[in-house]
Length: 184
Image (cartoon, rainbow, N blue to C red; front, side, top):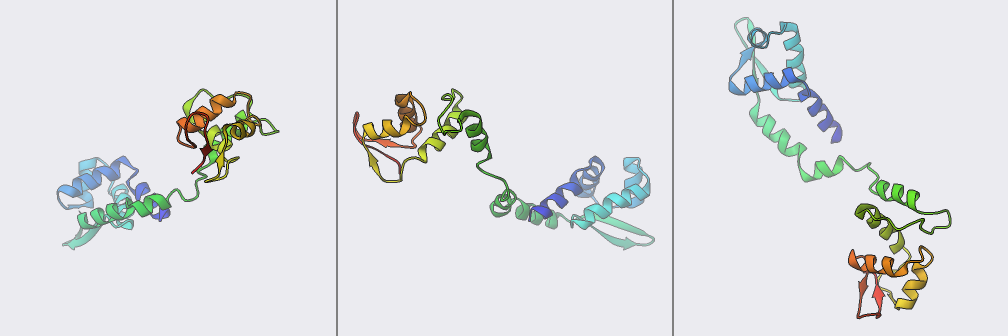
């Protein structure tokens, strides 16, 4: 479906085509009338109209010796609803690596042995590092503070900051001061 979106937007990605759509939204016009209004050659207007017709936005009917073009408003509305549906928008990013940012941050902040060079100060980078560290904890398993510190010490000596941030960002839960920690 993303190919259809690209074709649709390419058809509209021209100032003269947008002007043609705007004019046809007001009333039907012949190629010659549009050419005069836009100060273009009729062959150029015909080319633009062909692109717009290809995506179903305009249609032509013959009147005397002329083809008169009109905007297909129902097709425009239908295509807009279809192209911008939640399903189609989600499908357009299916081949995007959702972890690319995290992977870049991890590459920048993690040594070959898996430990952190430093704890990032920037919020987005810190979140990526916390997600990386979080993988060392099993879901729904309870850990003592001592065990949490032991695991976190593999990443950085400042285990208190890592522990506090994991809880602060809601990635881990804590029960009581110095009680149990767990990942949901």
